Amino acid sequence: MITATNVTKHFGEVMAVNDISVTIRSGEVFGLIGTNGAGKSTFLRMAAGVIKPDSGKILMDEQLVYENPSVKADLFYISDDQYFLPNATPQDMAAFYQDYYVSFDRVRFDEMLGNFQLKSDRKINTFSKGMKKQLSVLLGVCANTKYLFCDETFDGLDPVMRQAVKSIFAGELSEREFTPVIASHNLRELEDICDYVGILHQGGVLMQKDLEEMKLNIHNVQCVFQNAEEEKTALALLDLVKAEKRGSLNNITVRGSEKEIMEKINTFSPVFAEIVPLTLEEIFISETEVVGYDIKKLIF
Image 1 (cartoon, one colour):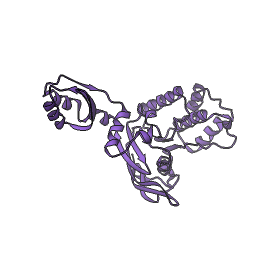
Image 2: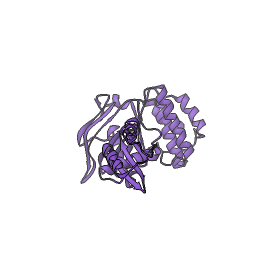
Image 3: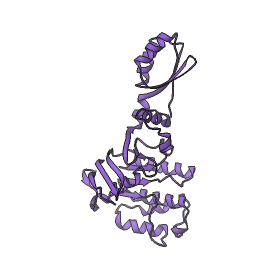
Image 4: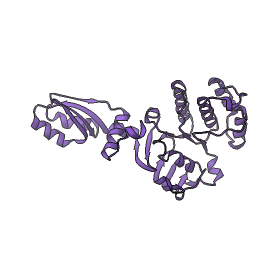
């Protein structure tokens, strides 16, 4: 488990991270969402022990990360602009990481290079951005660390390769103790892989949510009532997030379980009522509008 408590970081007069507190549970995929400048990369660099927080602390399995080699041996950090040794080839980088990560799986790395059609003896500086991203992921996965930090990992990958990387992560999660932390500016890239999402905005945490819990506790309902009085009474009983009306049709977003919501509505014998599935995008839009943010401007 990773716990960040009241973490703050300045770069001169710039507040990069402002009093962030986050818990990342082991064995889950954590998505860190936010626009450029929101503090994602700075937070990941602190979590990886690359830089030290000005205040607050970050613990990995109850140990401080910064200047702690034994803890860092359990994590692999893929930066947005991953560093490779000058004139290195994929096999050179594998040998480099093999010296530090004792569980680095060289046989598997060579096999995966072939699957991704990356040549082991080609200079990495001749690779495209997407190829470098793929190589970084393969190095990170084959290091067999407990934690893998990915900063904009899917940026630059085509849809086929993006899905391939997600499949690799899913396989790792099912086979060993593995916790990926993925930073991205785009929620759509992460909605089918993350278990938990934190949204950063202007250096602070706007919200943190368990995705499955969110999906189970907020619903979109379309309904038509017998008359205006019953409609008013029924809507007053619901925990409304958003309500729109077109003619006699109510289109409402409601907090609560599906069963609980429909039981309240059906008490009034509506002319029509059904649950309409919400996309993850719609859920986040509804949640953040409540606290005064237009999330569409932040992460889409």
